[in-house]
Image 1 (cartoon, rainbow, N blue to C red):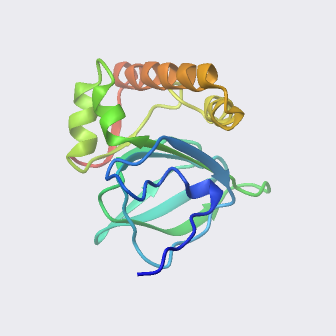
Image 2: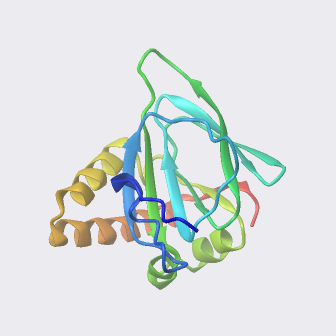
Length: 172
């Protein structure tokens, strides 16, 4: 089988490990021709548009500006983007390796729910556009300390989400 070069924005998809690497990206959303899966817990935030995914045969709609968190080992496919407003939507994805997610403290209810196939919709006060934009800048900085702070803030945001009440778009 020929080796296919991995574009720079996709290098966090490990070629040699099931769990992958931590990564973030921000881009104009595009529809997927087919389902895909990978060894991450994925977080998606799209201000200014709703997203419709297929998880197997199940249709899941993520409202605008809300962070949805799911185990990406479940085949998923973005099939529709419904913009609200005039601004062009920009999707921010967060790719958290499963092992790192499972080692985060004080998240048992979220960890069990997500790894059991649930899709968690975090409350807007836990994580919003500003936090995701800052985390993306920290990730892109290449500064080890800033990335470590990002991981700490992510754990705190997920803990805050549990306090505020996680809504399940897809039951675990």
